[in-house]
Image (cartoon, rainbow, N blue to C red; front, side, top):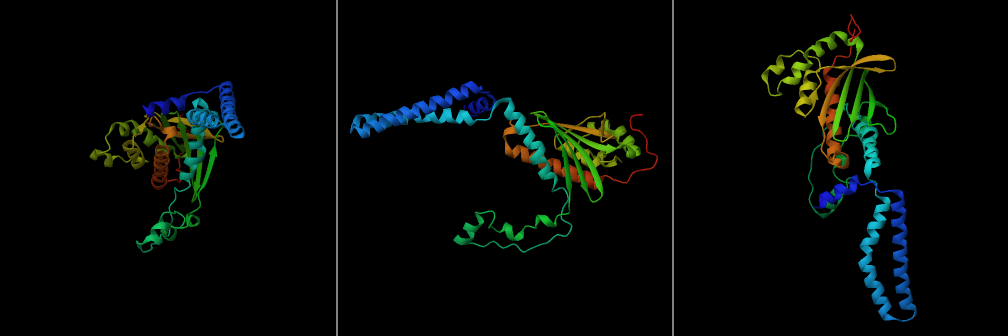
Length: 297
């Protein structure tokens, strides 16, 4: 029952006139209540004070609801804003962690008991994590660039790291996500081989032993994506970035019904996407091949 009510509030679109009317009603109700109580105190009329206090106790929930409605961000605009938040904030933040620290620093783990230590551990900035975590500044530099138009449900990303360049497009359609892995046309030899195997990779099961027999570029990335719930489009599409043509492999997956409202679902999606990007960086040979050709000629 409560979940249905919350869902109705999320999708409700409250007109501006109704918001203004509700806000004025809340002010008037509160002012009249305060007047009754003040009048009772000033004229030494205990009945007025009691009546005003009881009335305030009854009307306070209504006043709070009216005030909440003034600041509630719901309806279609809220969905658009939350989509944009995932695209321009949460996804790039996780992408920035795609390259691991090269030099690992291992420190001994000690679990200290006692009240002072327990109190310190309750604060993330004072707990033991502060002493064992590796500084973010020691992570190899990764440049994440974003191309996004306000209000759009998709964004393009360019990752530059250690001489490697990757283009990705992520499309969020409320309950579905599409991911485009964009491969430059100068890798035509690999692209041709990959395209010829996309349909076959899409049909096989991730636990099938024959998976290891496929000599397919991005084989592990695609099979891993399939096990994570992505479907692989057997037909690639063409995308153009800054006048340069790319062959885009399209992956699609269903999202949780409340994805745009659930931080846990959003974090899972963004982190899973980051590990996919890490797999691409690890698996793909970024050296251009000779005999480049136009992929769709």
